[in-house]
Image (cartoon, rainbow, N blue to C red; front, top):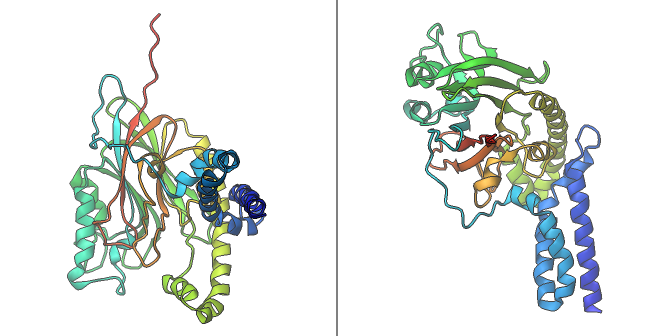
Length: 381
């Protein structure tokens, strides 16, 4: 009787797992409840692994079923918890050799407008100065920055010597710059996103998500010293529009759940719907690229979401390819949250990927990856 009940539970878990995987592939703008079903996927994956261990102790023949499911769904498991225990990452390098293509180091970071707002500032703008200087000194050839802020020389701000970030991270550090502005205020200060490159930027462009949002995407074609041209996308999807304290309050007590829960659900729903069609817009642009792609993004979405799934089905996630653990990138009270990602097209090999936890100046930790362009083998005639 006990075995029959355990076997029934195992079948239910497998069914739950398959439904959750199907939910991940449904855009929220067509059927929004699927997005909430997708969020249960890590629980189903974990329970299926428990079923494997249970049946290995009880009946190895029955264990074959959840074990097969675990093997087939392993890529989904890797999305949230990367496991590469035997991997030794090579040292970052930008040099090409005779058998491989060029190596490119890419740094991506949501810089939270360099803490320019009064509620974010600290004494003597210490974190702002340190953040800009760290980015300027980065060895990465390509920098993709979200929630960017700049005060050019023409600005009337008294602090433009601190926040002249385009000049300091760009020209003074030997990089070309491409600033995609979504807003310029009355003082001439600029808000948006930016791409910086030590390689020549030969083409550039933006992708709008509509007039009702400042979230958008930008891209730049970079000409490498080896003669190769690559395309780098930098994008920031719709915000979750949820205050961190509200989320903490919602699960800390029953009264908090009743008071905050419904409002959070509504905002989360609106965000998921917006991000799903924003991602569909970008996928069409990615598929039209004539060059190898590297993608940097603040997805504002978890690895078990439609947005992430669309990218993971077509590209290599740098963390899932070479990392170990959760790889959380959110610097706040919510644990194990990875919403900042880098992806690479099939023409690339991911050499290494790091989350810079020692750089705490924003609510996002910077990520740094090294990619190697794969050369097609020449066939001797």
